[in-house]
Length: 191
Image 1 (cartoon, rainbow, N blue to C red):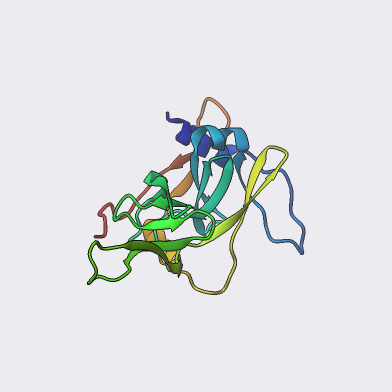
Image 2 (cartoon, one colour):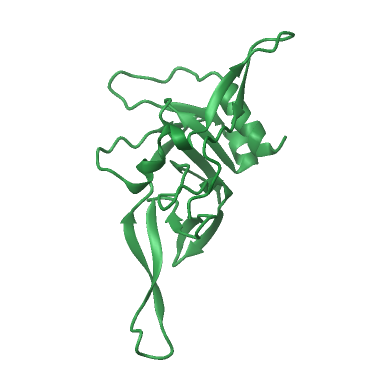
């Protein structure tokens, strides 16, 4: 079992310490910081409605929707690179660049295509990927879902067709265990 699977499994099976207040936004338990740091990336279905990717990179934690806004590529398999001083995750399917902190889509523009040599620069398409707030309390990591009513392109992939589901599996010899199982109803990649 990989360290990411272990972190995903432990974040699913760990009970969340109570941290809710009726007026504060809901904090959703993701897992122990040490497990997330070890794995580097953890995915979890949050609040039964949102597939979230939590990343640990350069001593920072980030959270965003798990699937790329462009075609639903699984971002947990993407590389993290810096473009124009901004940390981005690169979608493994079509190489779309998404800033970790803001969820902006970046692209390389051409300054003047008639002038040689061609000069390029990085531009923002605006926020395309929904990002979520990460909070650490006593070594536990929580996510507060971004509840903006403004539609964001990554919202398209928050439907059952693309969902990763947690199942409760009964082990007859021991206590109940929660096991994270990836179940994809449509295994074809969308070009």
